[in-house]
Length: 108
Image (cartoon, rainbow, N blue to C red; front, side, top):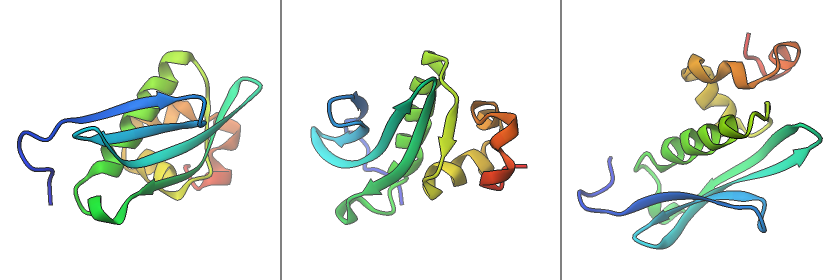
């Protein structure tokens, strides 16, 4: 299922909450938590509200979170299974995970 045409979807960094948030028509639909440690960004958990499930929002959220993280130059530790699964399906994001940590996450 995809988001209805005309829906306003945005992903914003909410550093005071330690997460990226996805908004649909201004309403919080989900988030991906992160913790910055030294020069790394750790993603432990991602949630999409059940009312918004099945619309591809997790993919939009994670892609944007990783793109924004890439822009900071921070490597990523994908402890969250949603983030890890996205990286596994989109190998162009694999470079965000330090080479010496990829095996730990089953990423080759």
